[in-house]
Image (cartoon, rainbow, N blue to C red):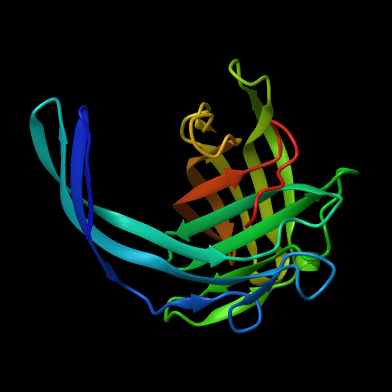
Length: 221
């Protein structure tokens, strides 16, 4: 159960896994750099059935939907030369999921340790190698608060899985400015998905996290 109470809104949500947990990388060991210690322990529940209620302005409404839970932890910071990452969690309308992370370097290239995971309808995971992923930025958004420019629309192609989708931020300004806590400014928020998979139309919903655009990101993973 997830319960939040603030002066402006509150919600109470219950979640039930619709698929088993997924271990990313090598049985949960997810390489994040050039050496073995540059890694994280990483697992997800990629499709959770959720229901509950949300209260705003004294009005309470029942809600239901699909969620994704990530748990990733590490004792190592990003290695020198890696400035941040683009992370995608995508729930497709054919009941499959895709997780992709792209580690960006100072030269603008994608680090070789970047990878992903594909989860089929039964919950079986397949690792996606860096060489199998092609992500192109189609549009950007510039923050008036931080002056950082973030990607806001992408085309993601994963040819071995016959995936070709466009990913669009549902709201351009989803920048997180945590000056009162971690001090990190980054972008994370909801996205919509539209494209083809196995030559059939596919849609979806997802979440994207973008770090290092408002300054090099050097916090622990």
